[in-house]
Length: 245
Ligand SMILES: NC(=O)c1ccc[n+]([C@@H]2O[C@H](COP(=O)([O-])OP(=O)(O)OC[C@H]3O[C@@H](n4cnc5c(N)ncnc54)[C@H](OP(=O)(O)O)[C@@H]3O)[C@@H](O)[C@H]2O)c1
Image 1 (cartoon, rainbow, N blue to C red):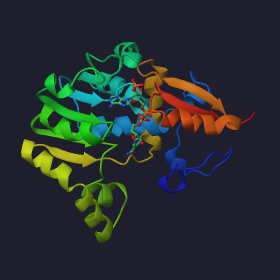
Image 2 (cartoon, protein in one colour):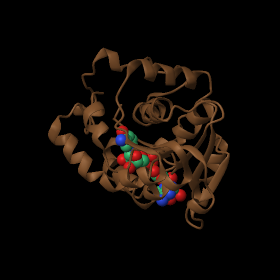
Image 3 (cartoon, rainbow, N blue to C red):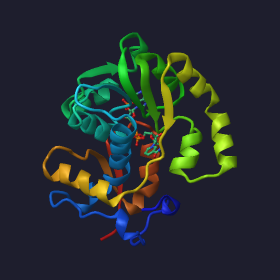
Image 4 (cartoon, rainbow, N blue to C red):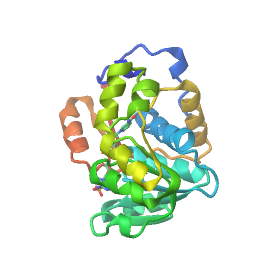
């Protein structure tokens, strides 16, 4: 759905036709509901922004969550070698999805083990993002969906004007300075809905090249518990809220 309509749960909503795609025949509604936001975010970050191609080396901190489980699979589909972080709780999952190297973020410092990446797709933000710049080759790219937005986010993703661009310039100053120091570029991506790209993801799912991973499905009556679980930060895949039949 359009960004300005996000943020509510309802039985019905109005969505522009161009943002829709046919649901893969192999999925039910609950699983399909987990695909658009996380799947499109991963596709746009890895293919459009990082421009991964066969042989690229990508680091994806936070591979076991909602976006990470799509990102590992899509990066592998694009032909990239994937290094990710997960705790022991998520290791088996990220390995099954195709991660080549898994670093336990609870016991190891990834910056001691990862180097010469072509790109980073950061799902964690904070210190993890700050340290990500040092593991990328000069000329490489760091794309985050959990850090600070930068001027391009304002102009390209949000259609903002001078004020928003200036604000994002200021809040991303430290990150852009860190990127410059390491000779890499920094981009904060705000995903955009797209029917054609959603159809592409649907095709990959039907061809069994992409598996949506669902952590738990909560009935609408338990929506508060769903948010508590989400905020725990330990989901393995997507959390879905199902409306009453
Ligand atoms: N900009 C956009 O367009 C956009 C779109 C979608 C999402 N987002 C944002 O992207 C971020 C990721 O979303 P998500 O849905 O993937 O999150 P999520 O599903 O809540 O992620 C949970 C997973 O992250 C792991 N994790 C937590 N801390 C970690 C760390 N320090 N290092 C490595 N893994 C860690 C957890 O593993 P353990 O249980 O092992 O700790 C858990 O499996 C969120 O901040 C979300 O708001 C932005």
